[in-house]
Image (tube, rainbow over all chains, first blue to last red; front, side):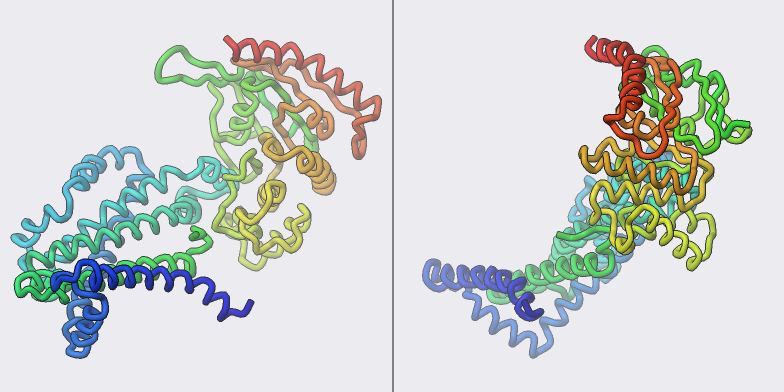
Length: 256
Length: 261
């Protein structure tokens, strides 16, 4: 099979799946519901083209994505070492677990009000919320990964003459990578929920703002456009993440 | 002086509740340079405890274990360990990188360790599999990597904990032949833990039989005077088999009785 055909066989069913989704939407909107409150996909697409040309849509998308990426990167960078420490040392786990176990049950959406009071309605409050939503997922998965390393791996390394630090860097850390990446993937998905909620309440731009304005001014097609963008962006970032894992960390976690 | 000596070794574990559990007691054994010593015993007799003590993963509660006259105080590169399961391999490293690991942590240059690792890859018969990762290899191949990884580090001896226990019968039999070949090529002293009489008679130059646990001891040691590849239909092989079997039969019965109650 040629490369092009293999790619086609891989992507073909996917494209077909998307096509059925939009087809079902089209049929439902045009022939079943037939209401101005449920615009068909072509109308939403038209709106999308129009808002892209005027630069409004890219601005909203850019604002939401930018917040997610900064918050996600910071949250992961903070969560990873904390998770490693919790997973490695019993005492650290005993001390830090009350923190993580208490805070992770307060939904990031519930933190919106306090975030706005503390950090204002600007970028800081959104980034704070994304960090908040990311950090616990990354901590928990990383710690679970460290504590699930097969004891024989550590013993083998000891018997081969590895010191404490070498065992950490050359065995514990790489053995934990699949868990860390899984945690980050979950955190990325949660970030989308949080950013929309935060932007609904206080922001000047972003996909959440688009949703809110749509409701205020009865711009149904803009609401739908925002929803479609969220779905596609979430899908695209997740695929990108998976591709990244496959491409750069495949030896740690063969992705299926 | 013997290579390895165990004197009055006892290991007890203190559980969170209940009385102390004595895994092994009164354990005395001397192993000479170049021996292939098989430690045979029924399940739960404490043979894995002995291996963990020899490897230095655990410390004896009393008594002493010494390698070349020096007390064993913890894991050290002078004792290479081959585990039963494949979970001791580093799945993110290729076969040759796994074999290099010991040399890498001991500061051998990249070029030199690759050269040595390739030689040991060759020795264990994994030519052409250098770039494969453990999940891509069969059970037998993974155990070959473990053996090469331990040997490449140039230990004074090898400790093997039922390394072929998880393999199918054909692969196990083949791996036994391969291990004998490797042992003959390197003349490295081996302590080999097993519960399989056939395996012990096929491999060992001496066989130590343990009593049933708890508190397992060495019941007796049989020197196996068979050279070269051992033939299971050879009357001398059968005689050794019967001798070992007679020694261990009662212990297995005791172990079963204990497990049933």
